[in-house]
Length: 102
Image (cartoon, rainbow, N blue to C red; front, side):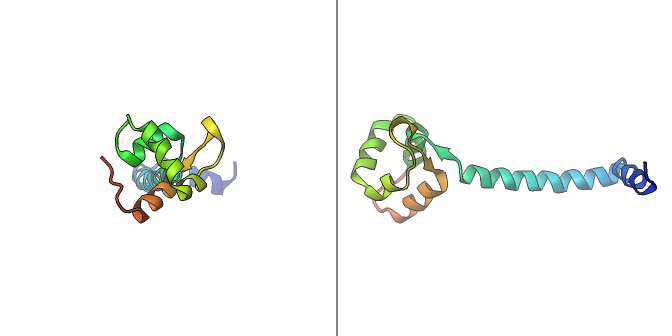
């Protein structure tokens, strides 16, 4: 093992360095997860729950998709494989009047 590698490893074992790294890495992981959740793909059931704020609105969501061509156009897939991106639903909700969650 090279001297530089030995020094690097000894620094990583220092509790103060480990604490600082844990905070930095933890923050980066939280930010990445938040971004990942914003771009999560939702099937009709979870998309309905997200749009309406309730779990029992799948049929209402399907009817809404049939009435709203822009909502239907943002989906990918066909039939049971149809999915909506959460960030697209957020954008659609903010631009749509008259539909409120909950």
